[in-house]
Image (cartoon, rainbow, N blue to C red; front, side):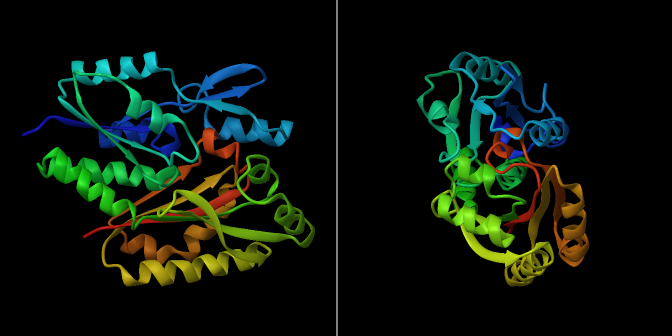
Amino acid sequence: MEKIAILVDSGSDIDIKKSEEFGIYMMPFYVNLDGKFYKEQFELSPDDFYKWMEKNEKLPKTSIPSPGELKEKFDQIVNDGYEKLIIITISKNFTGFYNLCKQMDYNKLDIRVIDSKSVALTTGLLAIYGKKLIDDCLDIDEIVEKIEKKKQESKIFFTLDTFKYIIAGGRVPRAFGKVGELLNIKPIILCDPNDGKYHIVKTCRGEKKVIKEMEKLANEYLGKLDKYYMIISNAGYKRGQEILEEKLESFKEKSSLFLTSKIAPSLGVNTGPGLFGFGFLPLD
């Protein structure tokens, strides 16, 4: 049996607890608050981060780990007895971590790097799926092939409280954001697995209509599936997540694995507090 490990970045929303539970390694990103860098998950929790954003109303800076830190993580994985490593990163459109991993020269491990073309826990779901394939004793080539195929089927839909942060991060046109703020328009955004970018798939007037549209999306996609992993997430807006969980209760019960998450600070800098949404990964 091949000794294969899986590594994700902290933008995958695999927190410390989930990392331990599923046996997945995690590499934290950094967030700069008031001139000091913090390792998210380890030194900065999502709750503390979103409280800081609400108080300061500005866009923090983020950064990826250094090559030296990544090498240290690789050394740890080798010392833990692994010979091969699959790295699954959030979309390379939002981070330089994918390119860093591809450029690393490290000959103690057979390393494969996968761009999930997604964000948050849908990337984490791919890692959990990959870990299951390892436990099923598939070889690394088969696992990578299956993950590459599955990532095209995963989706995450979310809404925002304000366009301010996503506009500042260059994610949507500024003119559209101004209209959205004036008319109380709430977007439903998809991270499209075809290009790994954000796309606005629907606009609604007010939160109630957003919830109804998300119910429709769940019926459209999950209603056709027999087996899937499912997530519901929030960024500093637990009530939105709770309402969505209520509305999607039947899909939660049907899922093979249901998880909740808090959006990592490294992603939250471009969405702001007030986000909530759901995602899924179809299974065979």
